Image (cartoon, rainbow, N blue to C red; front, side, top):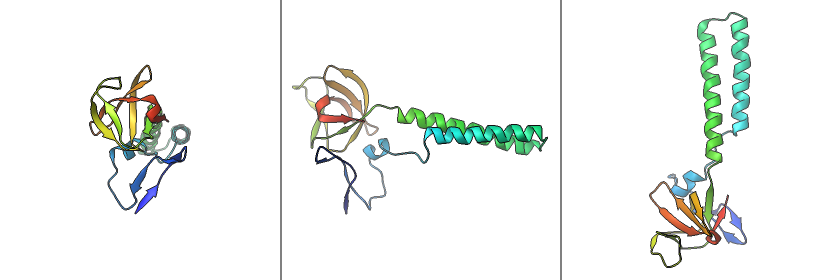
Length: 149
């Protein structure tokens, strides 16, 4: 069974098998974390307050250490999620879009990606975007063939 995940300009951006348990290379890039960076920071702030409350109340060292670990972990997860959300991403809108080896139209295609494929943007050169994906797809796509997220 196939499910429509997103639509833009009347074109489906991403169709995938609902029953397929393995995420594809594009799905990994488009995953959403369980909490936002702000929510993780809120957990870290609450942990910080509880930590100092435990210090002032002269609780056992194990309690203070556990609260310190929870606070540091929540702060680390907030930073990780923030960095992940700031990655420049693009989603391919055309079927069979060529990822070229150089930023010009007559360059040979290094790979072909289908509509809905997510790509990390590395840099820009005129109308061209240098893109890559974890599965080894790397090259250049025309900016009009993708939608930047």
